[in-house]
Structure formats: structure tokens, C-alpha cells
Length: 531
Image 1: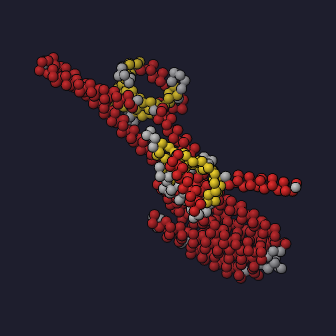
Image 2: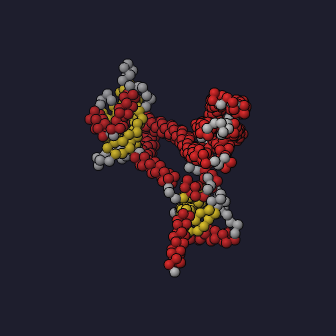
Image 3: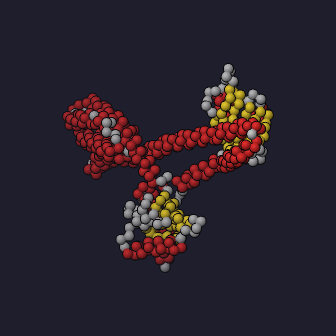
């Protein structure tokens, strides 16, 4: 996929996520309001003597969340492309405000119930129920965008994290340990959920694009069939004109000799052009006389073969792939009954050597009984599209290999600028695909030191001179990632031996290098200890 397509996909995915976030944020706020009401009721029923601070806090929270509830309603009128960033900031503000309010309530709840009068476990159970419910609500409605959830999560957990250091009594340590486990599990769930949302959104958008492309291809195929049908009709018109001229020729042989010669030349030219077009496109025309039960097939050498329709049709049906047979019968029946404008089917057929071939068949009834509307004659053409199917499958597999390769793969133009990278290379460098495209090979690395610049220049010169480089070295990218890199780049040349592209492969050997250094250290240590 090109850089522009990738940017467009990411942009559309972000718009869709924002649209869903605006819808979910209202349910998120309503859920928090209900949580606060339930917490207030529980507090009122069981801890009436300590109600003042918490009720004021929870009341302020409910009032604030209720006010925020009207903000998403206003955002539904500003979902245009120019308001994406503003909408995103507003949603972040809502999430941050709700997170701060949850944190304040936890602080008030933690200090409103004295440990001397109420069991420590009761206090922590109330806190755990409150914060766990808030986080579950966040996981349900905010994981479309991970930062929305983090803006709720961080402010709401800070009081408990700080409390581990300010209230470090032994009796409370198990509760804080349980909090930490719950926080880690919540973060993992948020990350996994966001990843799934991202993949699903992109897949849905890609599927939509593929459907549009398929519809466009179908339209092109129909237009081509119409054009070919027009050519067939033109050929038949020429034949009819030739017969008419032959009758005139009997009366005016001497006068029309020159005209007849020219006409024959023109007919021959059309005939060869049509034959060449059929041969080039792999098309075999056929003419089915339904009334006389005869089928005439024209081969690439323009020789025609007449078949007995019932026997030939039975032979064809027996060789059609079982998965395509039902659709073939339905399409043919619909067209013969006049329920469709033309007969159009792609199917697999068994060859004599036992292999399956993809065939595209298209036809149309050109003659019907005026009284019964029964089909009398049908013409069409058959085309072998097996190679096209194989080519499409090869392209699909190549794209899958590039996307799922377990090492970084990138393609450079003749000037060493990035024109394609795979996801592993994005992960290795710390840059997204859109950030890498059009960048020069080493523009994404830190070149402040003269030695590093000279090393990069030597690699560039070797590529331009020999067309190949392979080596291992430490590299630091401007994204902040530092890796011990294995790099192999080869030049791709055209038929004139001119370099048109470079293909590169990269691996992160950082862990391997650390292991080797550790083993070396252990060996040296063993030697020193023995001595």
C-alpha cells in the first residue's frame, strides 16, 4: 500500500474512532453518574455518621458529570474534518476531568472513614468497588482511543499509589498489593482491547475499499462484454451486407468488380482484427441455436465446430466444479427465463489432465418467441482467466509475506529514499510508515558525531558503487530507539543494468549482543575465579 493510501486509511480510521467515541462518551458519563449515585446510597446506608465530606464530594462529582454530559451532544454537530483535533482535545478533557473527580472521591472516601471505628477491610472494599467499577466502565467505553482511558486511569489510581507510601501499615499491605495487581491487569486489558479495536476498524475500512474496487472491476468487465458484443454484431452486419452485394454482383459483375474487391479487403481486415482480438483476449465465441439444439463454437484459428447441445451441455455440467455448479445452473436458468439482461458466470472446469481451470463465460439471448418469450438463440463468449486468478493469488500472498515477515524489510528508490516499509521495520525504527516514506536512508538516524557521519557516508558510497552492503553496527534513531542492527541492502536493476531500487533487510540483534556480552563476562569471571 502506498504512503498516501496508508495515510488515508489511518485518517479514516481515526474519524471513525472519534465518531464512536462521541457516542460512547455519553454512556460513559451516564455510567459514572449511576456509579456515584450507588456509592452515595451505600455510604448513606452504612456510614451515616461520616457522610458529610463524601456526600459533598460525590454530589459535586455528579453535578460536574451531568454538565459534561451535554458536551458530546454539541460535538455531534462538529464532526467535520476541520474539527477532528478540537473534538479529540474536548474528549480528552472530559476523560481527564472524570479521572480527577474519581481520584478526589477516592481520597475523600479513604480519609472519611476512620480506621479506629471501621474495619480496614470495609474501607478498602468500598474503595476497591468504586475504583474497579470506574475502570470497568472506562474499559467498556474508552478503549477506542487508549489515551482516553489512561486519562481516567492515571488520576484515579494516583491516590492509592501515593497511599502505599503514606499509609504503610502491615495490615494494609495485602490490600495495596491487590490494588497493584488489579491496576496491571486493567492496563493489559486496555492495551489488548485497543489493539483489537484498531485492527477491526482498519479491516472494515479495507473491506469496504475492496468491495468498491470489485464493483468497479465488474462494471469494466460488463462494458468490455458490451463492446465485444458490438464487434460481433458489426461482423454479422458486414456478412449480411456481403450477401446483399453478391446479389448485386450477379447483375453488375463488370461494373462492381472493383467495389467488390475493396469490400472483400475491408471484410478480411475486420475478420483478422476480430480474430486477433479474440486470440489476444483468450476468447472463444459461441452461438447456441436453442430451437435446433445446436451449439457452434469458434476456436482461435477461426475454425468452427458444431456440437449437439444436450450432449455437450451435459459434458460441460459434469466437469464444472461442485461448488460452482449450483450458481451456474441458477444464472443460466434466470437468463433463459428473461429474468436477467445477460448471462455472466465465473467458474472452475475440470480438464482432461485432471486439473481445474478458471473460466469466465458471458452470453445473451438474441432471439425469443414473441408469444411465449421462450429463448430461441443465444450467443456469447468463453474466456480462460486461470492465469489472472493465479496472478491475483500471487500478489495477495506477496503482500501477506511482506506484512507478516519476522524481520524489517524496506524498499528505497535510486536516491536511497524510503518508498515502502513493512510493520516490523516500523517497530524496529520507532517510526510510523508515513514518517519514513520519502526520508533518506540515514536521515532518521542521529548523525551528530563526525565518526557516525563518516560511517553512514561509507555505507552510502558502497551502495552506489557496488550495489550491495551487509554489516552489523550500533545505530540510534531520532525516534529515541537504540539497537544493534544487522543490515543487508541489495540493488535492483532493470533490463538496461540501471539501478532502479534497493531492497533492504534489517534485524534487531540487541538482545543477542547482550547475551554474548553476558556469556563473555561469565567466561572471564570463571577464569579469574580459578586463578
